[in-house]
Length: 216
Image (cartoon, rainbow, N blue to C red):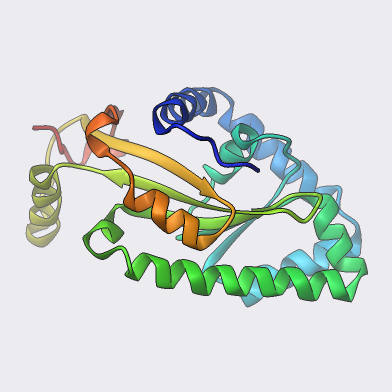
């Protein structure tokens, strides 16, 4: 995947894709499962091995041909780190030890670099919600980061609620979100540092269960 130049353009595409994701989320999950089911036995065993070895990583197997498609799959990740692998590349890993060794090296290096990168962000590291890489059918690697920003007042209310174990009765929060792609962890770091949150529009979001209200 190639990075998209122009943060404003990327933001619009990102938010448009998020709206579409909500409409097609169940379909995407089904497609992802289908891809996993259609894998060869060797590829299934390899995927099981990867999930066991890297318990802190979400492995998502799906075909994709654009940044938007990859984003829709990565949006289903639930852990701090996610790896999106095209099924063709996973099949190559299962049948060729050299390809497997190469991609395992990429995954391990990415996890280490992304962890170090997050620490180098200083105060900005709290904005990072999920990190990872995608490996397409040609073996091309792209680093990504999902970021989220809320006001200090909202953050203080969350922490206070957690400390006091209180429930706020409310229905929404206003949070700013963006995703950044880059061909390397170093470039990803620079893009994250360069984000201007003042030009990113916040999203009004319903809160599951209505337990907390972070609105101001």
